Image (cartoon, rainbow, N blue to C red; front, side, top):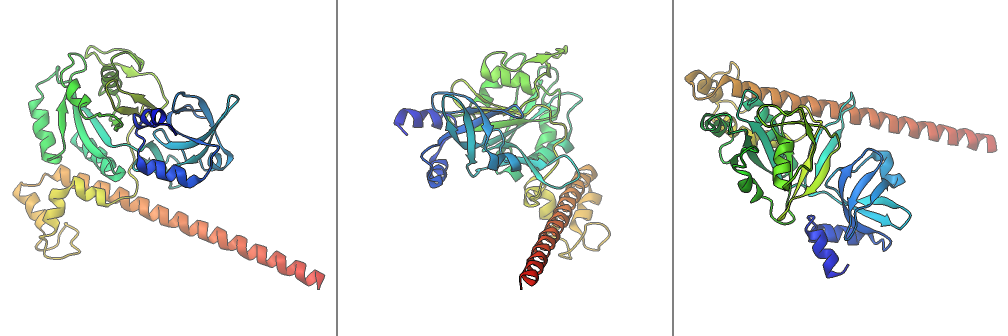
Length: 355
């Protein structure tokens, strides 16, 4: 790879870690690229000097192992482009896949920052932000809260509430209508840094991205009096921000389901975790046990019941995921041994006939 190609890839987030993983493939017929859009059966891949549409190689197609933001190895010719391998991820926004079977679904890969968008209006919800903070910490990326639509209401009360659940997490107040705060968001997006924007519908995510990109790159419709529109596209995509950095748009997501990673919960609910350390019993469930510091804080008014309920709810979700995952592994193990026994039995029957 020449220096020009390397520089072009570095603008997309390429680094020595990805380079080492790519070299370890030992395949001179492929080149590195970053998956920048998922169209279902085709994928836009940013290579050095071009951005072709690619298909999945057979080994990857069966497991469907790719996500927007992935670094991949592609075999690129004038006739076709095929994704042959996916490089190990540095981080990933992951949720429980839809359906009854417990499995992880990656919705954005190799992100450095998670912009959590919430609006200064009636949609504002601390419990939803706690969930998204947990998702961010699970991913391995750093969270940044973006309070949108601050031109509609005084942002001070909203910022004060956010401080009660996200102390130490950067907070930026923005207005996509007036442009206030947009440059502060842009400062986080230095060259090669990747952010993903998450939040409920209607908080102005696509309008914010358009502001960062300097044009109507993402289409919106049904513009409300607030100046925000409804996102009309459904595919995820990686977009380059003028001046440096990249942002992954994740339209079509409703509530993000958690995935495994209970340690992330401790990051979000550090106040409750610290209280729990002062309980009389190490296995305290924080319900009716004597000497419970959590219940004492609840009764004393220093801990809100809604925050404790949110903590318990997310704990239950994570435990349920772990149980379902264990059951799935047990089923797969039984299927594997059943197949082994069947193969051995068939082998013995053939051996007896031949003997």
